[in-house]
Image 1: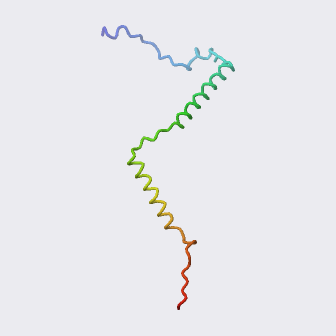
Image 2 (image 1 turned 180 degrees about the horizontal axis):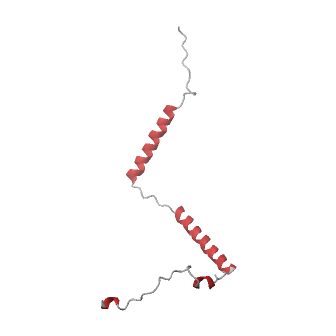
Length: 95
């Protein structure tokens, strides 16, 4: 029981609950501080966009070659599926 002798036995105090917190008023922020925060936010956004522009391709040369061949195959499949408007019609002189 000596371990528990130093513990305080009181009600739990929560922020925003009770009579004590009603007397406190919120401080109004200055417009200058808001302006500074906006500048910091915009500078961070600019840095993020610059970081996105500096994308480095981490693929190996074999992966790049594989992707190129896949694109060619997909393009050929697409062309095969199209109707053949530009083909020269076969003309038979003999019947």
